[in-house]
Length: 220
Image (cartoon, rainbow, N blue to C red; front, side, top):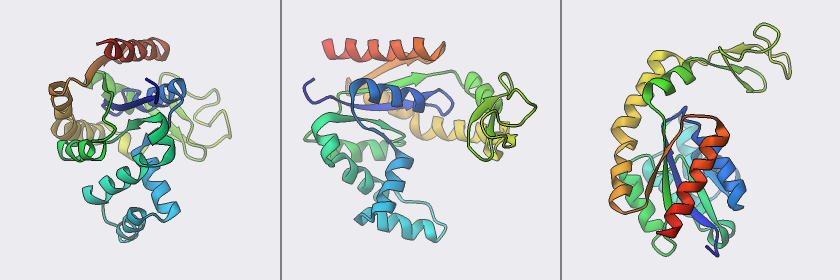
């Protein structure tokens, strides 16, 4: 592709999707665009929809689909994405958002959608074993703890389990994913854009599978 690649990453939280999306962006030399990054950037730069989002968040509300779609539209029409492409991570989350994305990308449609598949029980185990440094955010695991008790190897900060990483909280997120985001697998499958990728194994093995999926799709 002469203009990079326009790719959407799907997958359950805890599947390693974010890390692999960053690696794909570096490989294809395109922006990695996550929902959180887009939202923060739009608020910081004071775009039309960024100001709307700030008003909602300052009032303690949740950003609506209308505002989020507007922020995505602004970002995907920036010079770096129109000239090279992007790896879109964390959007769309629902079929309504996917339909909106189709309109946004009508002139420059998606090339491929990758679904990084990791079983729910594995995701549950990964997230509930996760521990995070309270000061620098470095991530550990019960299986790979810091060297000195539960003090961060990097800055000595306390390493804890986040409140939203408990079994109950993770199950709620997985249920929400199954209800709202998992249907996008069929949505993009019907459009001939989807490639399923096994997310189990080492990061290097998974990344190799992702690249193979992209290469195979491009040859079709």
